[in-house]
Image 1: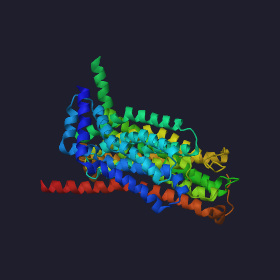
Image 2: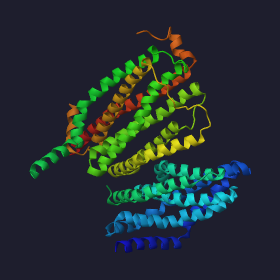
Image 3: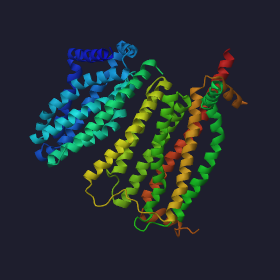
Image 4: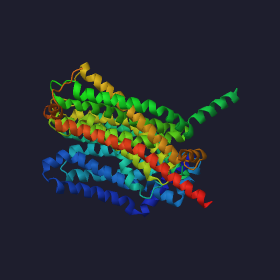
Amino acid sequence: MIWRIAVQVFQRDLRLASRQSGEWLNPLIFFLMVITLVPLAISPEPARLREMAGGIIWIAALLAVLLAMDGLFRSDFEDGTLEQLLLTPAPLPLLVLAKVLAHWLQTGVALTLLAPLAGVLLNLPSSVLVTLVLSLLLGTLTLSLISAIGAALTVGLRRGGVLVPLITLPMHIPVLIFATGSIQAALSGLPVVGYLALLGAFLLLALCLAPFAAAAALRLAVSGS
Amino acid sequence: MTNWLRRLWAIIESTVSPRYFYQLSGRWLPWFAWPAVILIAVGLVWGLAIAPADYQQGNSYRIIFIHVPSASLAMGGYLLLAICGAITLIWRVKTAEMVAKAAAPVGALFCLMALVTGSLWGKPTWGTYWVWDARLTSMLILLFLYFGVMALQSAFEDVAQGSKAAALLAVVGVVNLPIIKYSVEWWNTLHQGSTFRITERPSMPPEMYLPLLVMFLGLYALFATLILLRSRQEILQRERRSQWVRQLIEDERE
Amino acid sequence: MTFYFASWAEFFAMGGHGLYVWLAYGLFWGSLGLLTWHSVQAPKRWRRQQQMLLKRQRRQS
């Protein structure tokens, strides 16, 4: 019963997303545009781009995820679905997890699929692209989970979207550091297993804790105080 | 048996009510304010005029008398926010919300001052206003964590809801803090090209660490004073419709 | 207890580092002073405001 509700929430979110292609497409286009800005703003010199590619791609991905996060709970809050979700017998953290997973499929996974293209644009050797994709796969889900807490905290606010980056960016920094570290290591030919393992550990931690924090924040937002 | 327990709980609950905290803090205030004034005055004279200059750094090292306590208070302040946050969320104690609202700007100011004084210390000592080393970078991230909590506190029309949201954020933030510090330290070791470590502190002779200790105590007392002052005001404002606050204001008039 | 500096001029110069030391101390105590002043002043102002409000309420009722 509980699983059925969670799966339904998951499927509903995916179905809604498929109808509003703008919601998930925009962050992806944003991602590519930011990637394009860097050579224009700094330098198109291949060696320099290669050096910075990991960081640029990851910052662009981070910003794209943050951009997309505002919509996670907002539409449900506005049409009353959120209150309904609170009333179901399924535990709210599980439903939060279902929503975040559905959202991640639209943003994080999509970004991960675009990443090799970005890597080529920024002159990354193909041997590094695997590490890039793996780091994004593990990292974007962690980012989505952490940002979900921010989205939940600000869901009632009209201008809440502006606040989500402010309150969650400091907590994204560890993921950013180790993900870009893995890409730099791959560039130098060093082993990347350690980095990816640590990213996996962050992901597990986020999977265990973030849904509960986000659920608590949602309850706060819906109950009003 | 349960009657006794219920009475004990009622006593605890009344102790943490905003009104009782207001009365209690009023009695505590002079015990923090006066020592703060005295200790800071003594510490200033001692640190600026009496302590000898450092062999390597000359007189610029005197900035540590305000820099080091600031950094410590910045971190302690966030810990206080997290503790108040936990108390707010677990036991729904209103007073904790109000103390958190009062304490956040104070801690944030000390965090900012730690960065500014550190930067001004860095220039004559190591030739640069800023360097991305582990300690400074972590302190900058801490400042952003403060801004996040403060932004959340003031973003809601319903002040109580905002305080609770900020309480949750503070608790989440404090859980992340060791992870962030570890990550930044690790990142720093990876990118360190310089041969010297900026954050290394040689052991200090007593002529230097005694005035530092005095300033430490004085600034901690000032920190407590400011928080008590601001908490009291926050309580009055939040509870202004209640009978005891109205009584208080009227009594003041005469 | 002997003073480290021989004269006021030397005290202000701080061995050439005067700009940094005094700027740091100035910003630090200046901002703390502002915060302290605000923390003491705001309650007083608020109280006066509330008293006027109460007086007006009394007069109306």
